[in-house]
Image (cartoon, rainbow, N blue to C red):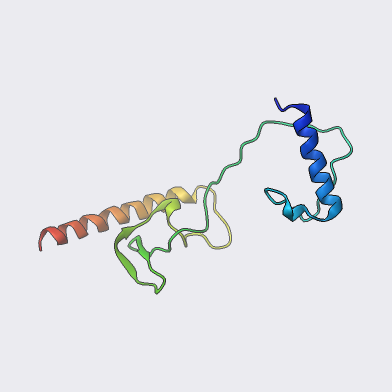
Length: 124
């Protein structure tokens, strides 16, 4: 893992101490395991791992025209969002690959709406 043994030992000891003291939530980052176990009996194995975020359930709410909605549910004129920048596309779960659909569909809608808006402004 290319981690000094002392650093790894200190991290495991810290976790085990927090577990014994019931203070896992005070760790940084907090440990939120529902059924945590102490790390005291090997063998242990390690592998390189990098976390990532595929999609969020957050972001500004959009309407069917990809317009961002304010807190009163009205469109913010000229502000659009699509793909992972838009919220409200997923409810309880994320469907694998769905971000591409949302990005494609609402990106195209946003582009069309921006072109219509630009044309309206040009005609004034």
